[in-house]
Amino acid sequence: MAVEGGGTLSELYQSSRRLLLKTRDGLERLERLEFSSSAGAVGSPELAVAVRRDIAQIQTLCSDMDGLWRSVASKPQRDLWKRKVEQVAEEADSFRESLDRYFQRQQKRMQEAQERAELLGRANGESSHVLRIFDEEAQAMQSARNSSRMLEEASATGAAILAKYSEQRDRLKGAQRKALDVLNTLGLSNSVLRIIERRNRVDQWIKYAGMILTFVVVIAFLRWTR
Image (cartoon, rainbow, N blue to C red; front, side, top):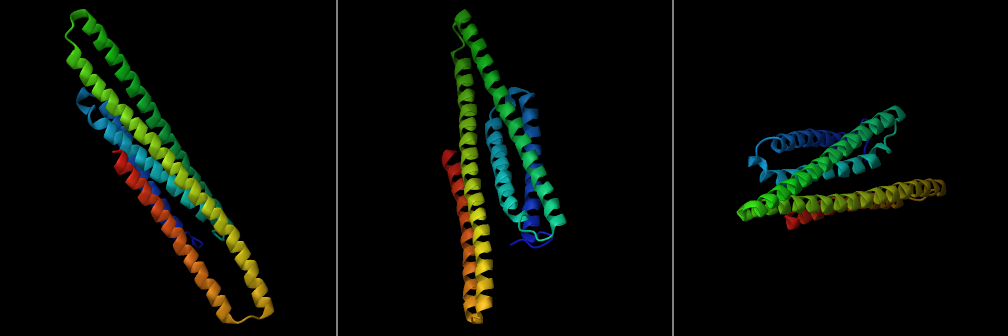
């Protein structure tokens, strides 16, 4: 649980800022490779997938932070964290749009190069090797796009699950507070209250285990698709 000033929330925010810097650097490298010689063609698909993976991780962090800033007690602090989380989410969306435009340009470039090679092949019948090279490069870029799309879908699904769990957790906490008020009114023993507190800690462990499991599934999925 985040307290005023945002302990865990602050850590998640710092992680998201580091990922934003890493993603910006990755996009700049992609652009340099794109507009330089063809030597960067082999490395571009893997780098693009890595950038997409970082963007998906930022979006997952935003989902986690969105559930935490609402629990901050102080309204000024809560409003401040709300603006920070929204800013991170907006930057992540901007990076995702830039990466999508990069994929579109690459696809167009591959198509134009293949059309030129086909024209040359009809003219002299010696471009089969060139066509094979462009086919392999086009397949690599298409595979990168497919992997990125599946990664984004998996990340969105995980974020939706975490958001739903956060919503249910807030409702359960509200019900728990009401139950504690009733128990205090009835004058029940402290042992009953301690049992409820232990149950709350177990719920916290279940939450973190679910987050870790979601992360492991995404990583396993990425390795499998690669």
